[in-house]
Image (cartoon, rainbow, N blue to C red; front, side):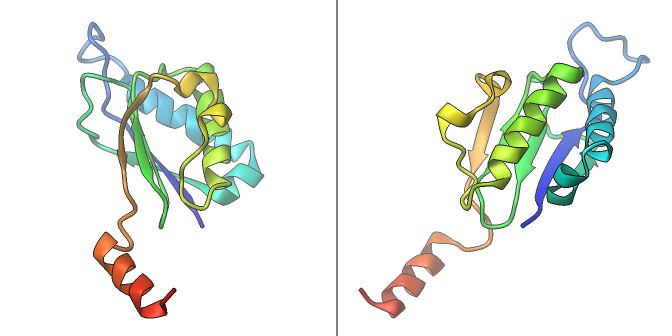
Length: 138
């Protein structure tokens, strides 16, 4: 099951010059380079840019999602190698889960305090899961 990392390419931090390079675009380029250098991870993770994740108060922002798994938005990531190391470690741990929930003890230090939101899987609504469970019986 492919994991998707969505990187807000328009993210800017307070104080960044409006006509300068966007830190979100810098983080995107660093992540693309990291995946190009790691074919095993690139086979599991797809990076996708997005114009805005609407997390402007917490730039740089990314979303991690996959079918039938929890999805997460993280922010306050610096556009540097430490963020790339943190994200690649988290993506590896996330890819190993069935439900997208990485146990806290397995979180890389750099993701702690950076989670903005968590969303349930979209593929099956809770009512569908309940109907499916009740049809299968105990």
